Image (cartoon, rainbow, N blue to C red):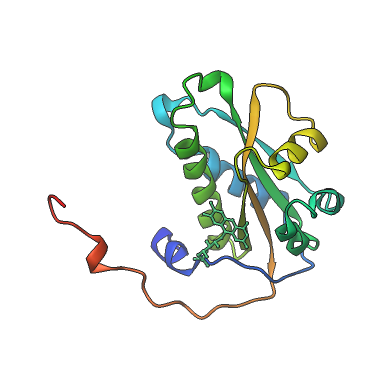
Length: 170
Ligand SMILES: Cc1cc2nc3c(=O)[nH]c(=O)nc-3n(C[C@H](O)[C@H](O)[C@H](O)COP(=O)(O)O)c2cc1C
C-alpha cells in the first residue's frame, strides 16, 4: 500500500481481536515514526513499546479507551524530553509527526490503530509516568495502540473540503 492509500484508508479502530505482530513489523512502525521531521532535527522524544497488556487495567479508570487495547500486541507511548525543549516549543508538533508516521506505517502493514489522547496535566499522564518509570524532565504526550482489526470500515468519503482551502491568502 502506498502512502496516499494509507492516508485515505487509515481509521480509528475501536474493535480489536487477539493478534500478534512480528518484530519486523514492530520495528518498521517505530522506524517510520523516528523518520519524521522535527524542529532543528532535535528528535526530542523517547518511545516506550508496551507489550504487557496488564498495564491497561491499572490506568483504565483514568482513560477508559485503554480497555479497547486488551488484545493488542503493541502500544507505543511517545514521551518528550523537556530538556531538549526548554522553551516548550515545537514538542507537540514533533511528537505529532512521529505519531502520524506510525499510524500510516501500521495501516500500510495491515494493522488497526488508535490514538488515545493524553490531556496535559491529567491523571492519565501522571499515571503513565509513575507506572512506566518515566524520569523527571520527560513527559508522555501521545499513546497509540496497534492490533488486529475486528472492525473493517468501508473506504470513507474523501474529507477534502474546498471551503477549508484558501488560495494564496485567506
Ligand atoms: C489528539 C487526538 C486524541 C485522540 N484521542 C482519542 C481517544 O482518547 N479515544 C478515542 O477513541 N479516539 C481518540 N482519537 C481518535 C479521533 O477520535 C479520530 O481520529 C477522529 O474521530 C477521526 O476519525 P478517524 O481517525 O477514523 O479518521 C484521538 C485523535 C487525536 C488526533
